[in-house]
Length: 586
Image (cartoon, rainbow, N blue to C red; front, side, top):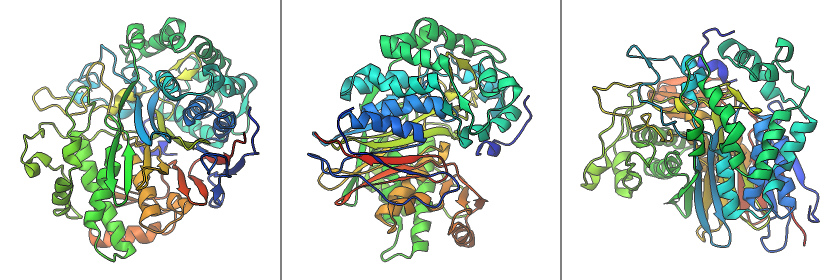
């Protein structure tokens, strides 16, 4: 049964050495350092930092067999879709940013969901009024064509070393034999029964609410439907998912009432994952690489360089934080205005990252009490302007996951995957929930005003805040793998780890643990539940920012840093992630 509640309520095998493991549950002290052991060739061994212990173990199983980081990523995510369905799964999509050690190259693989052919710009409008988020989230219109399985295949075809079917074995075994329900999954379910149809929809009601009661943490859960779906994908390839019975089940779920969607089997059959150029830009003696639009990865480069322009010489920590806030405010304003699906709109990335524009933008920061607005790089660079869009304040929910992996040859994957809101749309097909990714488009529509860049368009991919990031050193060697879930807050969460490690003198774990600060729009949200959050909030409030104090944040940072002494990894204590490492011996 649904009642109207605030969205804030949601924020709730080759021979090898034995891997080492560290967990990071919500109630435990900060993680100790996790260091990978030496191996032949690449001297640092392997490491996986993933959002759930079962999934971390699946990744390590692949790495122990000499698998590529991509093999480990696929195995980890197939397990996450089972044990962490509130955050991601094969009914959704996401991004892989991949570093290849041999060529010192970074590539971006885009498995973002797409809008059905029947999608319309006004499909979330009712009598010229935008649907409330709760209704839009649970509607059939919210379901986009899932991209995860196609992303797996594109990544495996490009990089994979282990057989395709091997990658699904851990998830199939867990789904068949059972796994222990985590506190995170179980903790969502009582609230979900109040604000969503998860406890009413066919399939999801029986699975998550057996006998009408929400699953309890510590109980054992099996999902034979999911095991069967993955077994078919393992045996037959992606065609088993994108056509036939599984595709029919997905289309039927999307088209079911209330608020029937338009996704068809033809839409599903037409889906393709695509490779795009990664966006890489200099920052100090490093190179920051991330995912291009429809992702928001370019914000990492923009934000870091704005920060350097804003921070004074010999800064205090208070001045560093202020510069970080102002860099966010300007970066978010430009992202919100210009970013959309690059196959449908022109996104002026080169101009937005031009040092002349960065310098000009930083010279005129928005006063603390005012709402920041986007800039116009064309005016600074004397070019034709593409500032033709309507303002957009798309609000992404935080049902997402991130994992960072380095294999025994020094290849790396930074991946952020999602079903959008917790448990996606709550609509069930073949053992998994379908996404509600279409709510990541600008849902408001007025035919008499300019279009927003992120408008709903048939076949388009909605803008995403996901920012999987890989940083290289001055020799183009791997330096850092980072990223986070968290909806619109992802760019801020991710940038915090970069600033913390590189500029603020923090260890990897200290940077992850540090209070989150999110400065988008006219507010600066500060996590006061972690030290020194309250003093940071007081400091920013005294300067004149509109500070919103929150006890906790929904980040799920997973970071790996390469040092001369080996790999150092950290998982976010705000979630249930773990770090495991080891080395493969020949």
